[in-house]
Length: 445
Image 1 (cartoon, one colour):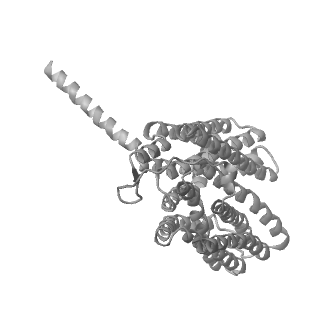
Image 2 (cartoon, rainbow, N blue to C red):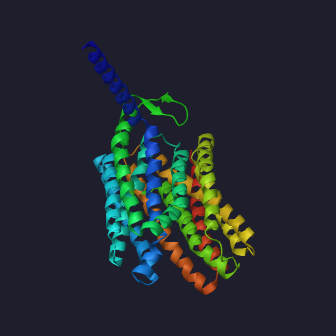
Image 3 (cartoon, rainbow, N blue to C red):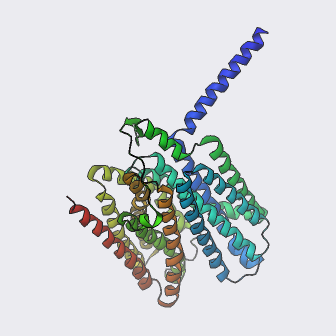
């Protein structure tokens, strides 16, 4: 009897210790950061997992015209805008992150189910629309959650690590998707999409607490998590101010960051479409087998954390104006990188320019992506999710707008003039906007 009692006591103590450890994990800002990174990996993996086999499905199985592929991509962008806008507004008004993220995880699985049974073109369109909605919800709220639990002017490295997971998924997703499609047809990738939605739901339910609750507890206790070393005592901030989506959108730091993201993502997506054509048409390099994008992905993956850390350190050292110096450098250097690519007469020179572009593109994107959270934290407003819904909208605008323009001009004028012109115009606008902020900051008393 005493032996059974001792066993029961030991078991209860073990459960208590496990529960205590799990509770600490669920209340940790680092857990929010880790789950956000995994969420973006899942989001990008789901997209790239299914994008590689769409030409086979649409043209070979459904006998749709090639133009149908662009409509499918557009549907994803439309879904992203809807998901990000609705979730951003609802999340800030309801003061809820985790619950909406769990709904977004369910939407991934719903998209997978639609794809599993897709036999017609309209079903593929519906799948991409639902996937886009889930992506908009995920990207808005995962960045907002990280911004909730880390202090102002220290988000660049956090955002960079989250984006690092995006690059890893972007590199391996198409390969995995094609292998699954060859083995099991559409149902193979679709089953993985369903499973990933369930996995994300379980992780959010079991291991996370709402980021706003963690933010509230740290503020009430007078503590704010430092980036690298422990907890630092600070005075509790005043109550957060309310800021509407429109008021947030017209603030100069948000305008500049939005323009920078549209520029960075738009040029990146344009080059992803034009470089393979240029390799075949002008450089006689038809047997690339995707190595160009593998090299580009490796440069992105290696440089993302370094640029994020450098951005944080420079802002700590010289103030917020350094963010705009970095974006100014990225804008001007991107023009140089594109010129190198456009004038290249060999594959090696083209890849040097492309690798340089990866670095300059990140110099625009990382400071801009972290600026939304840093601005909201610095202004002490309750608009974190709305801010990142603007970032997702900017991403969608860049991905949808510049690539069709580039393709249309390439078919008529070739690679050189359209590429330089399309890159130079938005980069010049971004440079002027950054200079405006720098000059305004310099003249402030």
